[in-house]
Image 1 (cartoon, rainbow, N blue to C red):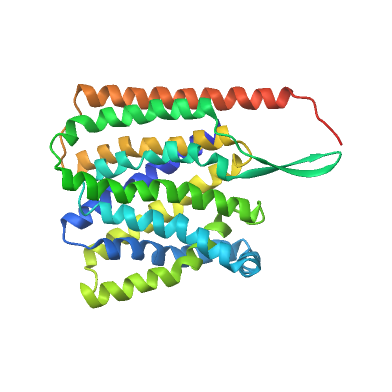
Image 2 (cartoon, rainbow, N blue to C red; image 1 turned 30 degrees about the vertical axis):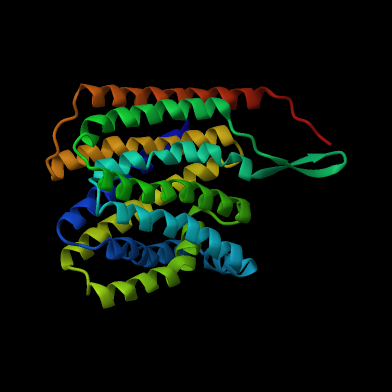
Length: 324
């Protein structure tokens, strides 16, 4: 249950991304600056936090131990996640981006077979491939149906081009984020804490972000003061606070695919928080009856995930210890 609570709190801070990215686009800002500035602003905060905790040496050690996979999965988790999200904001309102992003709930469950876990037996250690947690997938689909219900009234006013340009990039992001996140957890195996892991992954992706910055400077010019301020808010709220909370929750549940799916499902709350934010800041209309039904389905799905996680934990605690 602790992991679920942390995940929901993270989704609140993540929602700031969808709302502010949309307001930046509406005010003439570019997705190139929205994506790169967030990670550039994150670096000094993360360095200060990790340095205070005396963990910089461990970050350097892990980054240099296996530089290639560290770079690859960092780019997948951060660049292929956030660049498509900010790009989609140029073509879709925040609620649609947040809604389509919920595909990551199902994506996270479907990715399970790509990972293995080690079991110690009398004959040694054996790698066993993860299986798709069917019950978690079923509950995630309930949440996804709820998300679709929320979008139906709004989607009637969106043309096909907007749907494609606003959805296809997010489909890429929806699979990239859990894939990169889980691969990094598998690579590090708990040797770095949450802050160290985020710092290492952010530093690893800096060359990509600097390339985007140079491209933006030569094509559209420097960002406005308004975009700088809002990007800074996104960096602190979503990049530092939300990412730290979410990674903390996934770290706590990394050994159980069902729990991990439940934590990733908490991201469905981002849609509710994003819609509320846009109602306050941009003035979108109050959700209709179909949307209310969708919100209720999301809440039911979240409750089922929490109950499933609690029951699974109790069953594991009751199992007798086995020694080899």
